[in-house]
Length: 345
Image (cartoon, rainbow, N blue to C red; front, side):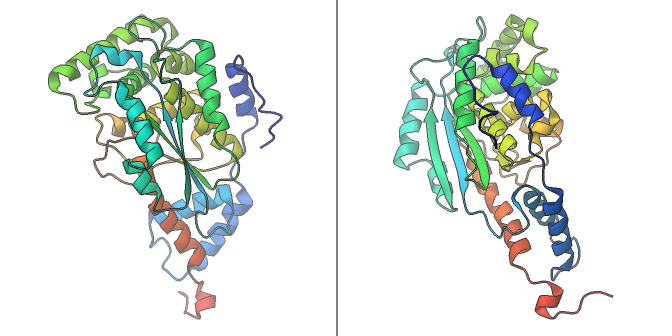
């Protein structure tokens, strides 16, 4: 990536994204062709490894046909607090966000255990936890400057040293923001986009839907702009997620998406330009009510479906082993000639 092109300030986000869209790296057709040629010669019937074969070819297009494993993975957990949580939309109080950030740093969370199973760098990046976003039912969640700052924190968190990026999040109340963003982007009945998140009861779910509808009504004048939707209804950690996914895209680094919150953010980029998700696969379909519906809108087929709904990049970190299996088979298997095995006539 030409770093000079992507210098930024906290006031030029729309122009910055416009520049990024004009300078996107694309998969290398020579890498893909070489991988396809090798795949045809491996000691197996054509297509017998199913989706693993397509995953290996997809990855080779971005990272080269000589890769035999994932050597360096970036897992980043962005954390933010949401003013909308004051409306009783979560089963947990907002102080849990800070407490979980401490847990991540001490190695005690699920993501720490999952990340220990593959070669990775795990970053935890809290963003202004002492300043929750505004309550989006009555105000814009973030000012334009605050939104841009969070976005660029995410963008700058990714560098070209990594083979794969897995962005994750932590933020009490963020399934409410994610549902509001999805409803604003794709319309339809708000209830179809809204789930129980941290495990709220039916009464709280009804309250959550009412809160989202109030927010959509409050910001109806900006609902034709994906970026404004994220700014007015999202959170700082969600803005940072968007920045990190875009950063990986302009650097040609593949991404595995996590759950509903990450996918709602990816949907914002998709609505700006569908090419911004060319480097993405969906790690899993979570148990959150609308995640599968959102994946279909983005034309993404998940690698796993394990009824997970934790967030913090956990589902994507399980799915990374599927991608590793695909790359290992592609890179490590012998060809028919190397193994002196007769090929089909």
